[in-house]
Image (cartoon, rainbow, N blue to C red; front, side, top):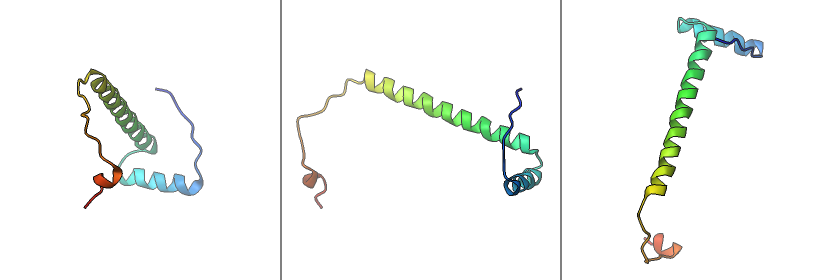
Length: 76
């Protein structure tokens, strides 16, 4: 594991330490968990975007000849 240094104002640091203590963890553990979740979420999103592009490229769907005006689409 690598160490990373961050700069926080005193009030933020104090409140973050309190939250970590309430969760029975360390500030370091809380930050690590947050970053792990962020990386996992971003990885899933990137994978989903790649899959959408692949599906679009594989698609044989065609657009029909019918066209509507904006007013026709929003007609009530």
